[in-house]
Length: 279
Image (tube, rainbow, N blue to C red; front, side, top):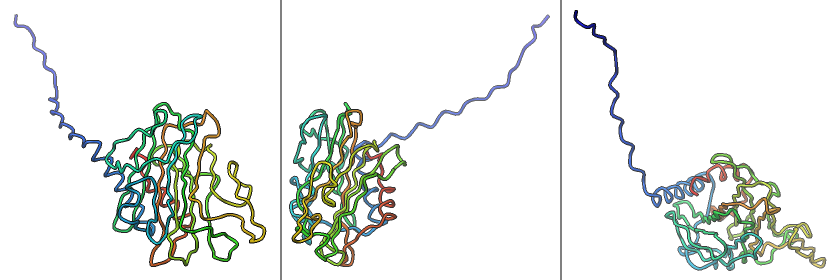
């Protein structure tokens, strides 16, 4: 007696299409920074620095139109050590990081030149998660002008950070300053991104409000604070708040010979364009 045969339906699987070969990190990283810089300059007016400013040396000597007096100096703190700097600009836009010379901190700086303006980036990494403080220093071109001198100078900032949740939980601390809205010197604008909202935030402002530095009142001239120092500092509140990454973004604000004082909506727009995936 013949054996009974059994049949079963089956589907032949398609041969999977191979995934495209990923681009090298050097390409994707640089594209990311360029797209971020372009996105920022597309949404707000920004300023073009002198050609080599932010590319060489460890400070911006002038920046054009007396924006700086040896400003945009970079300092990093590892664990409980002292501040380390001045850090040299290395123009590592391709994805490499250089040794910062303290602990296991590595960093890059990169000035991206766009048709509408320039954006300066500096990124810091510590695999041991021991970055405890970051600071800028040097001088601005708004030489010792004060709020009560009648020049309409300003220093803006917030103690509480802006939240940036597009690429994870990051917070941005801002400082903006300039001599005058009608002066020829561009405003100077900083954003410091930290993956921790409990950091302390300081910049020159009304007398005795700074926790670490006091800007003494000049009663004779009724001066409360000066626009001269390019100082901006964020620091961990304690050892449990040390972080693995920091991103610093700087740009100048000027358009049609008018100094730009960015409002909160513009700052939030800029923050939304910063792609934290670059790091």
